Image (cartoon, rainbow, N blue to C red; front, side):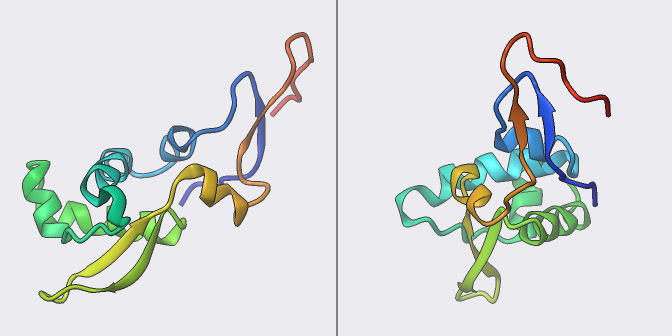
Length: 116
């Protein structure tokens, strides 16, 4: 997994900044999970069902769910009737509260950025 250490840049941090450092399907599943969960804040879709929706092999989706969970963007909140894990997708605003020092920092215009 990529290092998500703090980095200075021209833009404010966002979930997209973090997802760019993760598996390619993470950003699709993450944004989709909010549409599915809506107000319930519960994403009860199995990896095979997500694979079917995105027209991917089911084995490609398990690592995506794992990485979203391991990085804290998905929190397991229970088990569904069919045995699949129910997740709460965590917004970037809420996520950064418990992941301090892992977000990009926007520097003021005219400020010289530190060399990486």
